Length: 232
Image 1: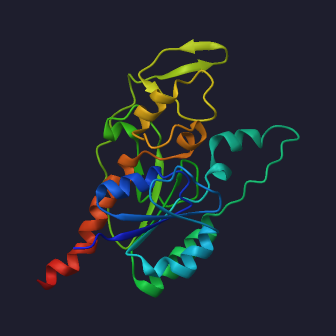
Image 2 (image 1 turned 60 degrees about the vertical axis):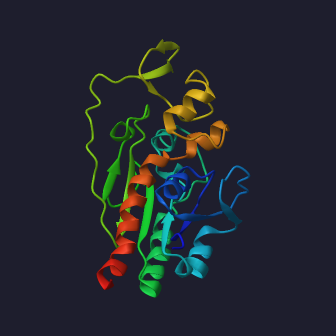
């Protein structure tokens, strides 16, 4: 039986894609920027335009619009006198595009973003739930199917290793953000995230752990298979 196909919009280097692939999907990525380390079929272009034009051709669509507008770092910078940036909120137009695809084709959709973003919290995932060495909380807005929430272990007793305010702190968790600095080696970042197809710090910093979308993708495939099983 052919594998189901999922569109991975705003795909970056493919952290989410790896999880969906491991769950059993064929994955196609779309991003405005070149992504030479993306491990699957890739198209360069405007993600929202691609969703509107081609989203109905897939069995499901995942979208991760840029998170910089909603990140804690951006929020902090915007409180600094004289700070300006060009980060824009692409969540509303992405939500509209996903709704258009659902109306046209009736397929399930997923949208993901950082803590602080204006997403519904249909699902909130943390790296501790999957035995990872990153907290990496992410919100997921899910339409057309449901996903159970894994147990979320307490953060108590866990510390993030790295340099903060000129002081080195020890800890069992890894800080995967920015350009690295004293936050760990590339190998530590890769192992903490469960991503080994890229060794570019920026790409690792922008990714979500594949374990998250493997969890979602497994249940999404069950949803897509359900009508076939019911008819058998």
